[in-house]
Amino acid sequence: AVVGGSGAGKTTIVNLIMRFYDPYSGSVLVDGADLKELELHAWRSSIALVNQDIFLFNDTIRNNIAMGKLGATEEEIVEAAIQAYADEFIMNLPQGYDTIIGDRGVRVSGGQRQRIALARAIVRDPQILILDEASSELDSKSEQLIQQAVENLGATRTVIIVAHRFSTIRHADTIIVLDEGKLIEEGSHDELLKSGGQYAQFLRSQDARMKQID
Image (cartoon, rainbow, N blue to C red; front, side, top):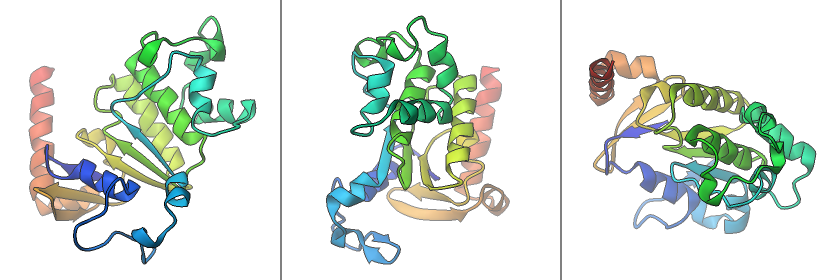
């Protein structure tokens, strides 16, 4: 998981991993190999990215999920939706997977849009799944479903989560904390809490805000 305030460099890390641009100095290594030495199409084909600003097409749910993988079968589409905890709400819609969701998915809720987008990522069967603030504006139920889906996916692939909500990242194997483009802390949730550094301060501040809301 990647944590930090606005402008700390979280999305920059995602962009570097995706090779939307290369570092001016230093290098990004993948299993010891410089990312710039890998074939770009093959590298990006191994990654699926889900971000906060999801773009869904004015088409059926089936076709929106299938856009993640050229030639995806019906079985693959449904299985991806099941893994994303989207199948239940889809089947409760009058037309099921044939439901037209409107421009940018306006006919479904924010949580449902994110689960469709996650299913689109899962159908690619990526080696690396990146979630860039993908659950920042979800209701608690949708957030819990996506957290469970991500936890399940993490058993068989690398998952990189960029998030402000600490509930989303507590169970990450490793959490890195950024500040003004620099890595200032690294460890598990419990380790970072015990160290009493910026991560612990972030968490206390967020807990205080949530209590005020309650």
